[in-house]
Image (cartoon, one colour):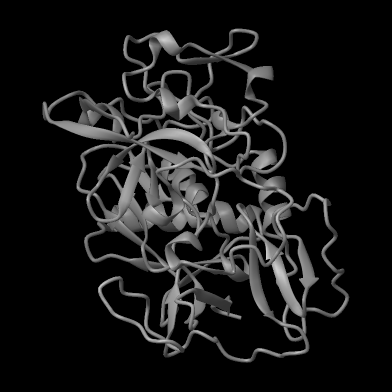
Length: 381
């Protein structure tokens, strides 16, 4: 049975990555005081097989600290994550179960700048994008007619804070910017959009830091849970832009996390060497093109693959994603145009017939006679 807890809305739904200045920046993140007195309900959900507590925002999205999940990325029951799953597993399924944490195709985040953004927020956005493009293979493109994109908007909160959807969420992706958001925080939020969680959630984190649960705000303990299937690449990196500071979600002014030698972890404002190397591994410079099955090895049972690896399987090209395999195209087929062009996005209020096609979270689907949706490939190829 799902449990619900009442907590202060300002304490848990706003990201507070630190209250001290970083050593290489004059930027800090606010510790937002309790002003509203409002309460919210936290509900138990499973993400990648682990239990977390999230706020139901009532629009099909759920908030976990500064991470925004689409409803299809969470479940009410524990579903084990199989690292050795066959590439076609889940290709034909209920549409809502087909969604996972997804990469962006062609190393490119497609974005829309909402009209609510101030000139300062726009400047921060472009400077943060430059941090990623100048140091990694990541690129940004303002949307024209792409079916998958992230909307960057002003949350209206008077803080140096933000929140973002994790991975490519089709047309539902969002980055929310606080009024006083800085480049470091925005760079962090872009990391979530790329598909990364927080560094302190990694399975190897206890080798490098100590966590102090007694100092963590009520309802925020799951922000420091260990995820055995973390989406972050490489080894634990205390310098990462994706790590919390020592005082994030502190309820008493005492540190919630310290390095093993007792050192405080400051707020990070730039990408670390580990962030750069890991991102270039997951989003490699080779984005394929034409008959991309040529030279790609067949999938091998019981072999563990990394995000970004490509294999052929039953006549199709697949790419490993954060939580599974994405079918890109049929071998011996050269895709010239976007296969999703002219196809409407899935609408849960519509009634669909066999043969109908929809786009959903960056992929093209067709409804089969058994009422299952078949994944026909990734948009944008």
